[in-house]
Length: 384
Image (cartoon, rainbow, N blue to C red; front, side):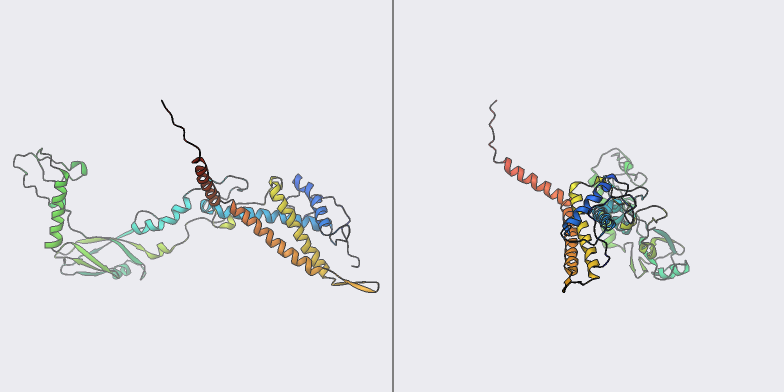
């Protein structure tokens, strides 16, 4: 190819020769940069064939390969630990730090169930009341919401405080005042103001429970029990009120509070909110072991094949005396594409095989196999 610079056979790396300079000051990277250049050039056919690449092309591919390796490793770590990382600080990088699993995000995800029961979460339960009117059984809580400045459809009633007096209030002790001295045995439960016992005969607690249950059954079967029905925020109460002015209290939430997805966190507040804010930086090349470096060398070679293929594609044929030569542009690009894909898949498979779940599965399998192996060992009989 006319005036196309070719690989001279050697190089001398100097900081600043890579496009981004991520690893230029790493001694191991500086040492390996020239070795990788020689490795790739020879794998591409030098010195038997000219290689239309320069040292900066090899350095560029080398830097990209290291960055790709780090991205794959740290992306996997971010995914593996994201439930523990979400909501944590972005103040310092997580490179080469041991991650400690926690239940922070899991609990935050489960709070939505507590919200519905009123025992947790971030949705505020509010309180309202309506004035009961004699002989009026049904009350429109949507109208109450509108008069309270709540938008239509926002109100969701969670609890209505409409119930009869507890059975313990109406507990009647036929032995009270007869000389058997039943004392206030329920004081320890906070019911001392209600229990009618006044002497010292200790009765089993199941006796009191049976009588209270009988009172409840009586109210349910023989009397119009205190209850309510709530359909589409139309509150119907039983029995029908017979007095004016009494207040009926209820608790409610606003549906917009439940639908609010944003809890906290932003780039300004320095909180991990998604995988793009997990504080992983580019890897430190000198920390990468021989397994990782071999992957990087092979990926660098694939990138160099791709670059060389595009360069040779500019000159499909080269004239020579009496004929012309067709260059192998298509072969280089095809090989580079398949090799890059295979290398990334191999790395991802390797990372997956060393995930927390896989390692625990292997450990459990090893323990099971070891147990089977030990079961073949004869048991000794101890005679004391």
